Image 1 (cartoon, rainbow, N blue to C red):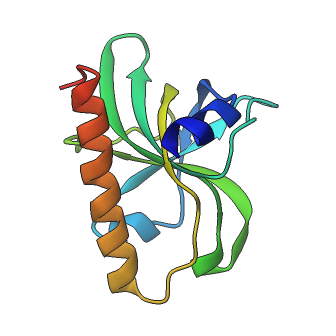
Image 2: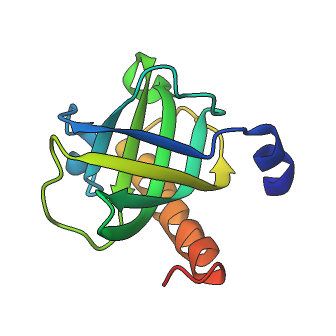
Length: 137
């Protein structure tokens, strides 16, 4: 199923500036960077992806990306949020390039904070496994 979804997704990269968000991921234990992409760049299927983050050409990081609305938090507008693995520095106002490496799952609505945390934990493990198999770590 992953390969089928990935074939339908034409998005490979986005470039943009890291902006301040609502800090929901931080409250869940998964702080994210929110990216304001360059205009007219998004042609992705909503969902969660394993991704690679490049910082101004000098450092590559890895993580999970969520692109889309957030039915759990009643947010209809679409955002790009990235949880960067093993990284603690601030990235606000920096330009980043994000590569969509592998589609993991669609956006979905959760019924509790615990359910979201459990799913994100699974997504992180899944993404790390995908990235490891591709030589990222």
